[in-house]
Length: 368
Image (cartoon, rainbow, N blue to C red; front, side, top):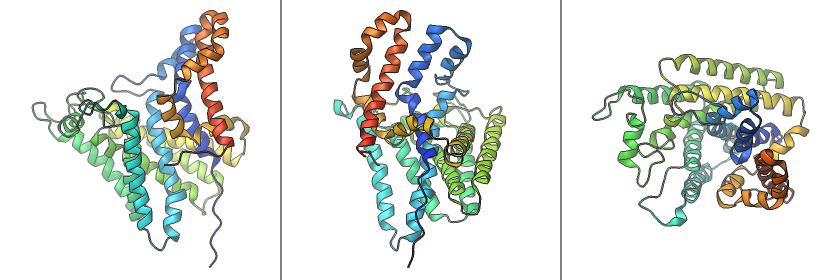
């Protein structure tokens, strides 16, 4: 029995994941400082984009988290489905999925300072937990629903079902469809069921319903992965399908948001659709440039970050890279005067990247 050779790794996925993480590990701070120090119009505009929308609306920074979830979904057909198709017994695959989800939930507890041992005020919802659980749900759909129509139906069910819950199910004492922090059904369920502390006191952006909603973004990433995995389409056709899907979704999300607002903290369905649309467009661009045109040298900086994304996400929580930057570049920052904050911000990113480069050269990767 001969097995088909495993397709080459898509470097564009690592690069896009690294690009996404760059803004979390210091790129946001650096460019906000650039806007403040220089006063340049474009820099000040970009600095504003590197802050979350206060509630309704959309800034670039609101894309960072859903883009990461989308990328994790892209990997489902490229790795998980490929293994499932050749496995005689799929139980180890399901077991690994559950273990991965639980591990990310536990790492989320750790990220939220479980080591303080203050369980009554511990925040149990987390970014990592949402990534793990949404991946689990999306993967189960991809594994058990074989047809494209069935997967699209599941996606539509999540998006429309979630919208119906948010808009039609009344919150006691408030009513239905009140999309405010304390009026959403999300916050009511979080206050009712989530133990410990909520991120925003009356609701949690990684709460119970938010996890279910965000599953749609991961599932849309899975559908994008099917496009990349297809042997029927050429590379340019794949890029065109991804770009066309992204443009259509982004347009639909934007138009529908006039009646059903985009709210990242509540993961409204219009937010999911719009964010996934932009993610499709970015994936199409990175895939075309990195994997089709093979213009790759510029992407190495991001790929080093992307292959150890969980490592650096946890690392920035545990290690004071700012102290190391001051130790190494404090003198230069002092001489630079008002621009010293840019020196220190760039220094943080440089130190983090060098640590990741060392791990990359040693083939040390945190896989979950």
